Length: 136
Image 1 (cartoon, rainbow, N blue to C red):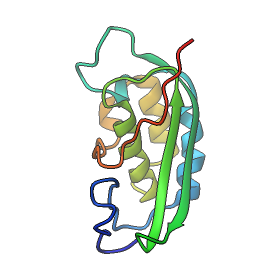
Image 2: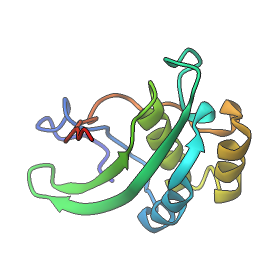
Image 3: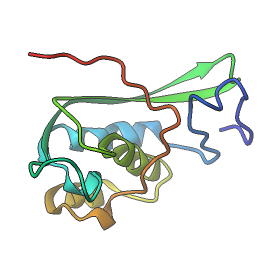
């Protein structure tokens, strides 16, 4: 990771100065797949009483970016609905996994118990992009 963020990406990406293990993050991403209660990964006052959502796909990809002159890591999450701060909380947790601060057992326990203290910090909204909305 670069110690300084490219000014071209400042408004569009989160800058992480510590090394991240993308393979480990991808392995952990599988834990998020499926229908779960996302209480541990949402705002305390999320809309509605039902916090069950179905995560259909979750990938973590790293690629070189010429403009940034560094590696860019993309988190792509597809779900049948999201709760307030759900994606940011998942990404913040995954950053901690990538830095070796959290393990898959802790993540699994957070999902099952809904314990917010086991999830990671909520990531910044910088770089968060909604690609597509589909309606049935």
